Length: 370
Image 1 (cartoon, helix red, strand yellow):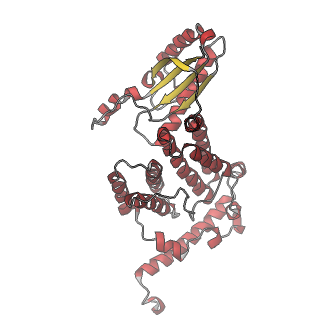
Image 2: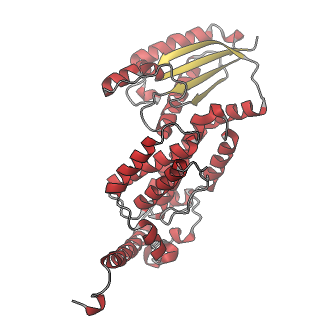
């Protein structure tokens, strides 16, 4: 036995070994980064120059994200096997809270932890994600208003400043508006997803980072009209046109399970949209505009539901436009699980899914200026 190690506490030895493991991993990341897609890397507009280095010149020190003693003191003790279930229990025990932003964000950090843990992520991001969930939950438990600023994470590079700007702009528009709670929850989760993409970039998985960032962009574009609607309410803006008819399309009759694009439309769904487009075509002269709104049930995460509801609404909009001989001003937006038509408490999952069917829908609002 090496006598110089004889009196070193076991936890210190483990931390030292952890540092070495992370340093080796950082070196491998740098080497692998040289093979990554340059187009994907360039599209991310990465703000940290050390992340852009690749090959044998890639840094492996603290500036490149190697763990410090302070990082290990804060995160090194976190074990996902014991901490993750406890975080979920604490989140569940919160009950309804006014701060929907923090609550949604905490759950999304928990979900991100589960996702990366399932992939056996050993970079330290799992611990940082749990730390963020813990910070938000602790704030709600103590009744404190959580800051909307994100913690600077060691394993997440800053990418896509344009998306961060869009996020902040939308959040300012909907903050403290009661009718915009669903949008605020979606935006909170998109922050987590953008930081998740930043982690992909940090470990030089630029293609994965680009794919994740593009999904964030798609979701943000889908909530834009909803954000504007909420902002209009805040400023007193009003739309004088009134909906003269609302058509409810059951999603289960329109799309194949979990589908949202035109390829996922069922034959009976196409037939129903064909009939409705002929109905609209006969009223073109009296129609001011048409709005297509997609909804999901409450199962699934807010970000996923928002994206799915928006894709379905966009597909219906495009389909109707193609069928109309005379074009109409048609817009679309997704509302996720908001505005449910039914409330279900079934414990059996199959029964619950069946009960929630009316909430899975695409509504078409027809407005007249008369």
